[in-house]
Length: 428
Ligand code: FES
Ligand SMILES: [Fe+2]
Image (cartoon, rainbow, N blue to C red):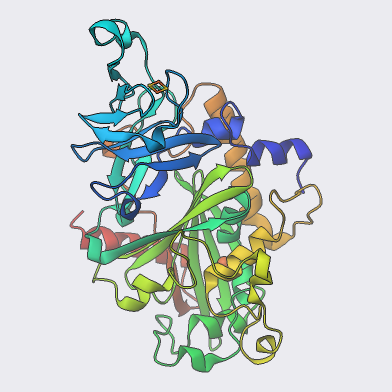
């Protein structure tokens, strides 16, 4: 349980709020590349409680500008894309991606004082099939050199899902290892016939997660956030080890038997305090992703990235299916389960009424990191995992695992061996 004040601190992300200012110190996804192909119409976007327009100028460069024209406020998502920028439909002012007013065509001499105006603009860059923006003060830091942003397109996939709840609820679900034994449990193992089993075992992750529902959890603080070790009994002197990560300030990294030589990422970007976009990446460093991996996160999704199972239709819960098919009666799509669990907590979970238990230790630790980082940002220091030195922009040690190992093995050493293996694979 936390205080009402702490809950506000952790969940409010509009401009000038401590958490809003913290999230603005990091590059954040603002759209999928597929939403803004060359020649596409500008996109009206809302992020961190701000209304903006994302567009690609006629050189193909993405730009993110304040939605309302600096002249008299007309909506720039209707504007013309031409002449090196975005031209407002009302009186033709032309803006470039940096927010400079290039033309005021209705003014004598094209607007002699137009250079004095600087329209709100945020820098953008593209990586891993996503357009990122930096909305904070000063020079932007480096975009972290995450593996999933740097592999070839056929080795990765990315999609986003609209979630009707605060961003923190979404991300706290990722760092809660116990729910995998309940919320996502499939009661019918036949559904997994022919699917990959967990390395080191002949069982699926569904079976292993169902066999030991009360795992041992350990948390370790790293430079990027938290590394979480979850250990389950896997019979015959073996343990099922999962290593997952909370990455500052609003993403998580985890593995599963379906991602071979790679991992999955959930990145929760506030639209405002009561809704967010969940960006879902997965990648392999070894081979192109198969159709299952490419389409899995697009299941039950509308063209505008909303789940067809939602609160309005009670996630299409089927109580007959709960007897033999799934724990939830909500189908096999994990994304729908997560949406149900987090959205049904309410738009902003009342954390003054929760009762945290020992298995919530990663959630407690992550909240502490966020609160400390807000203080750092408020005091003018770079918060944790803001990277400015190119030599420090290496994240090989950010790895996820899902493996069965001997009970005698030192599981902390196991992840270090994995990290060394990955570095060798990249010749580092
Ligand atoms: S309101 Fe945009 S140019 Fe006048
Ligand atoms: Fe989940």
